[in-house]
Length: 402
Image (cartoon, rainbow, N blue to C red):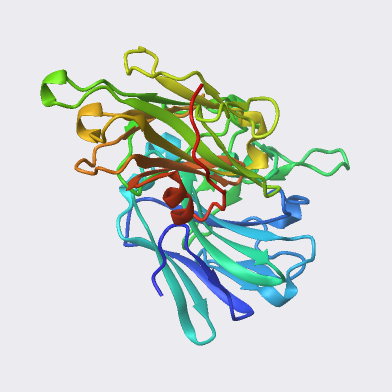
């Protein structure tokens, strides 16, 4: 079975081997596994399995010399709800490397009877760390989620994201207290010739990320998490009124979003019905105003409070034509996503010809406490049909603006 991003499958075998496979490349890849609770955090350093801690004390997860991860589902401790499988590039910042340089990579899931599934890994840009996939509990059974979302910062950023504090490689301190986990390693003469040192994030000197990334349809890019929380995420829609000579009279194009919180709460933030949301209280999302003309220079903006990212499961950014005929080509809508420390993400509504009034633009999904942003740009007759396509579950009624 070949998986696509976001696809989930049941795991029917207890013993699995998961491999990151790629053609030969100058990039040196390291894999790891984080055994986390329901909140996406490890209980301690022992729940981080990598080259420096090759076997979990339960025997459930083992890191092999070929960077494969072996998982025995029957031995996973009760406190573990998810195993996040990751890959990083050794010394990526110094070597100016990222996952866009890899072609033909795939994640292979192998069981006793052979290959269970394969997940192609592609469409990366500035990422130096990837959450490849997640093995997780669901109603007492184990499933696999093909994640394929990445972010900048390498192994240190991954560790901090899952609750592991990383320090620079230093001689062991004389004090008896338990040291912070050290991600340095010595390579053997055969395959490990260099020593890796991951400096702490506050003192890392990283090359500046690109200022802008224009997303292709289906492409996912994760926002960079600096420290323990995300900054405020600003999502802006800009559009223009078509020229009267085209015969297309004025339109009112509205920015909106569907949200799903981790406690199961679902809803919409939109001007229609005066559901403008709240930044400091659930849903931690707010719509700033309503541009009914297309002539407001700042357009329409949705803001997401990054301090509460761990409470949000997903957000679907969409727009709908409240008034006027559907002519998306002349409206030339552009959505930008900005978050401190991340490049500006640009999503152009560049698929024209549709006469439908609602367009799903971008999907933000929580991956390890940050958000992956995927360009969708798919048109629907109305918001209710869009809701069903993305399995949201809201009840829709006809509404009007004041």
